[in-house]
Image (tube, rainbow, N blue to C red; front, side, top):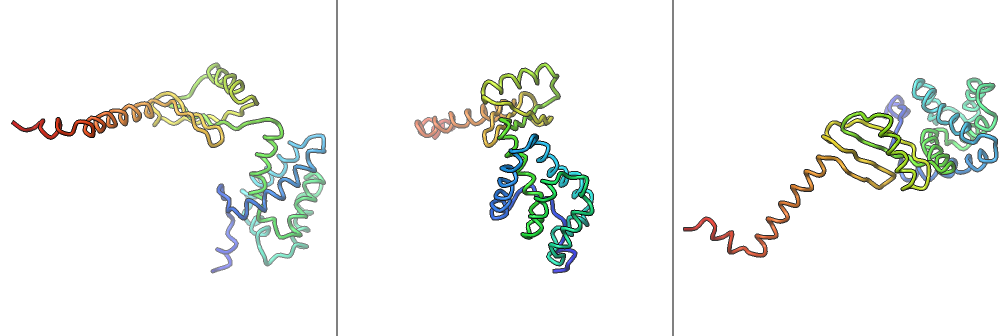
Length: 214
């Protein structure tokens, strides 16, 4: 495989199981230290920003972080050159630990996990709301208040407009989905009608067999 393909940057949203386990170990270790600071969220945001605002726009830097051809000493020098005086000491030291253990390639995965861990620490719950048309601030506020009561925590709304819903909305909280869209209601009605017809055929097949006979 050509080196250009082998070291091609990737920003995967779905992590390999093994990668996720290793990334979680480092993320949890970082959070344990960050939680003792005055602002753990700010430290998490530093790591996330490095991925979202730096690596995404500078693929050659990510290639360097991922490359097995670049020694960890060289990677640490790069980190010092670009982040010294810009990043907090804790974040910079954490990145150097990743470099020494050959885990800088996991930085994107670690950042994803850190966001979730910090949200859990703060009692926040990500809620994805899909609506057929944009809704006003008053309705968003009502949705937010109802979710607060239902979840017992602080929901963070992520609104998405999806015209295919026709009307209504779909709310996703983690793995749970609450579907109140019109197209789903129509589909449910259609399935119910099919079920009723199927049940009648199964319980009284003679009626349908003789319906077309003279």
